[in-house]
Image 1: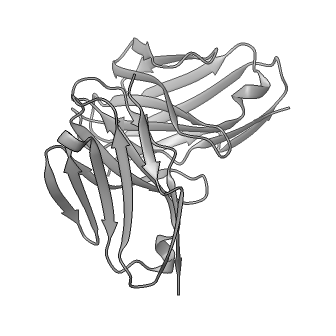
Image 2: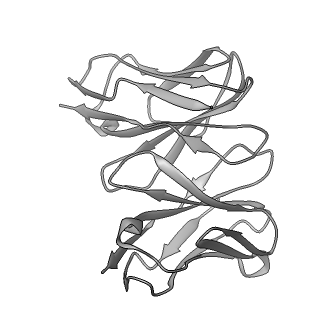
Image 3: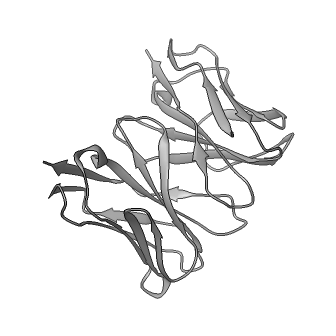
Length: 111
Length: 111
């Protein structure tokens, strides 16, 4: 079975502190990976995508960065959190444009 | 830049009645359309994907695509209270890896 694991489940962080969110894909190799962000009550926005290890493309600039250190791992991070980073972060995967499946998400609160 | 709009913003239907949701997009070269369901800011559940004009059925969910009219719809047959959720339309172009989501339609099914 193909599964998506995201960590942590939820995080409360201070403005200006660093952040690292993780996503691990289990199952078929070489997936396309995606990071999405959803502000509370807002529209889901794609942040990054990666079609291969070591390559990440930015879609929306939110003072965040992403990396893909392994085929099955996608990391979202920043050195300094802003209040506007609060929201729900979702990792997703697909293969060759087929159906995109989402992880359970991480809820981030920045105070 | 792709614009995706969903209507109505919210919809209440009685259990067993057909529910119809709409999604319009601005980029006529789009060829990858997906409908998702999201319960209370959790991960997304894919319902149906459609790539060519016409109709695609997945269980009680049917998507209709008319690319000339820049319109894709979702019809839910015999909706149940457990179908109450936010329904999201996502549009992309094959090989583009960029997905634009609509703001969603909040569906409430009453018994």
